[in-house]
Length: 419
Image: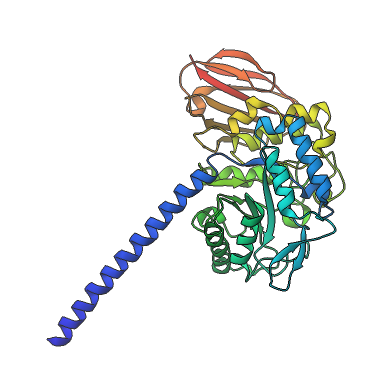
């Protein structure tokens, strides 16, 4: 009898502890969700060093880029992060504090941050959840809290955290990202946390609880329309369509403070040698670049330019600075578009907007111009709509549907207002 009583007592204690544990976990998850919504209520926008400079970066180039972001109108349009990717590191000092390469950053990261902040731009930086980064520089494994405090002391506002040279074990990845996420929260500064594990371990299921506000959904984007080697896509390089076909299915996981990151915009690179030019990245035409901007915007992906902002042609400016398209990406409702039509030629995406409007993107995946006709009701949109073309900046129709010619690889982007 005594044994039964003790077992019952212990069972009640265990049950109470288990309930308390679940309550604590739920409270933490809710707290992380609230914090993420505050840090990244809309998809982050900015410019990143990697595709243009690779690891050959210098503080003077970045100051010039900051100046150009202001002068070109990019900051006004919403591109308010300048993010230093891999290659800035100079190792660690005698107290194991991570330091910048003194040849690349003779004034130090703090001075650069002060300069960038004076322009109304936030500064991002890069590290890796291993001992080495992808380009072979110093990573943050084992120094998460120390590095987070260093970043905070420099005035860093964003961390891209890569996963090269790390085990392909899901539990280890979650643990390593969670450790850095906790370190950033303890750093005393608001720092947006970008999880860059390339989608292989499905970070949309766990990265928010690890402290992330955005997570890469695929391997690196290349400056090309599609990858023709379907057997080895990671080795042959991901084009725009390859990334769309992965990211499009993740719409349920996106929202304010939790974004599926489809990787950088390659708009305006035109096949420049370097990271995005590897693995068949021979460049695209302006229609294809415009499609990337349209598709990334309706998919609520972060918009991170990587071209030379100091020397943009008019086509690149027109694409990157289209405020009506950016407004779709930055809509406060935070919905990622759902792909309603999917076949070899046509994709149609629908994205609800905060004021009740709908954004509709119609992509011609094919290599020839074709006519397309659609009834809005087939997308679940009943009634009549005024249709505004966000690239032509004008109303192109009113009624229960739309029909027209779509050029090869073009994405028509419409804003529908019910009438």
